[in-house]
Amino acid sequence: MTTTDTTDTTGTPDTTGTAGPTGTTCTADPTGTAGPGGVAAGPGARPVRLWTRDLGSCLHGTLATALIHDGHDPVTVLGAPWEFRRRPGAWSSEEYFFLAEPDSLARRLALHHPFESSWHRGEGLDDLREALAGGVLPIAAVDNFHLPFRPAFHDVHAAHLLVVYRITDTEVYVSDAQPPAFQGPIPVADFLASWGSLNPPDDADVFFSASPSGRRWLSTRMAGPVPKPDAAWVGHVIRENTARYRRGTTEPVQTGLAGLRHYLDQLCAVPPGGAAAAEALSELYVISWNIQAQSGLHAEFLRARAVEWQLPELAEAAAGVDAVAHGWTGVRMTGAHARVWDRQRPGELRRHATVLVRRLEAALDLLDLAADALSRRG
Image 1 (cartoon, rainbow, N blue to C red):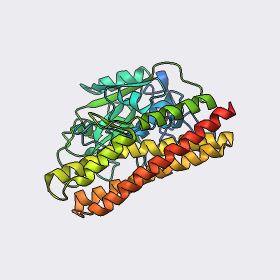
Image 2 (image 1 turned 60 degrees about the vertical axis):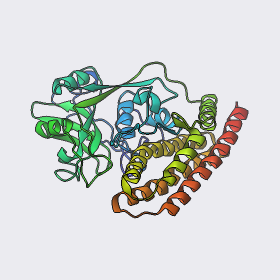
Image 3 (image 1 turned 180 degrees about the vertical axis):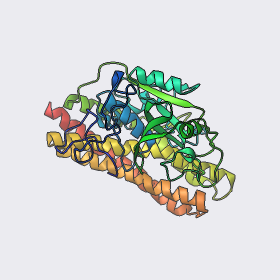
């Protein structure tokens, strides 16, 4: 992994918010002075966790930081669900897009937990200060163009998410695990410019520009009891996920295996070049990132239990789901190259799409075997 993991050196999930990739402390505040809820009061703020995965975006990373702050394991909460959903035309050019409707964003990403989120539109920093005073870590929608620590600073406009964990009169302390990882203060003026940016269309990033930040921010909370991740629960989760994939639909929302097949068939049928192809390929890159990220996280969730319980069937299922996650790479990158550099490879796109569907079919069969093994385990 490129940045902070959620385990200490023993492989035990760390919900304290202190362990780094080798059990070291990721310190945002050298004074260690924490206020109400552990954030934002006094001369310093409790450090929050930098969390990301190689296939992940800012969406899973920021939600994971919020979960860890509240004492929950993000691999269990965000890694238990696994699905494909697409509503034609319902997407936005943001790194953090995920089709959640009619649920909240957190609820859809954590189907097996009572995790909830709400979008807000801030008038100013006082809204974020109020959230911090109540123990909530605000997740702000921003534009990378105005963030001094991002490579895109004053170069490329792109929609992004980051966590705010402290605010002073002159600085806003932010946590952003997406490489290059950063945690610390930036000037208030830079934060406000990023948070309120119009994020205009930018040819240097056709996928994540043209989406105003709008001073939006996301709050999250665990709204009920958290299930115990024992063998019975994991087996139940697997069966729910596989059933959802197998009862897929093609309209109005494309879901599951049938929906994925239908979507990829439609995608590969679009004539190369032209406005329709550009729109279809832009949508592909945007919507598939967090679908791919969820697949990778689900594989990690299964793998962790397989190691804990020494269950070969679960390990094989994890490998099958991981193959699906990486199968998305060929589809996404072939589409991206066609969109950005006009490298039209319709035959190659079709081949990658076929491989992806076959890997999904194989993974579902392996998951059935894993669920049976968990049932026998009792």
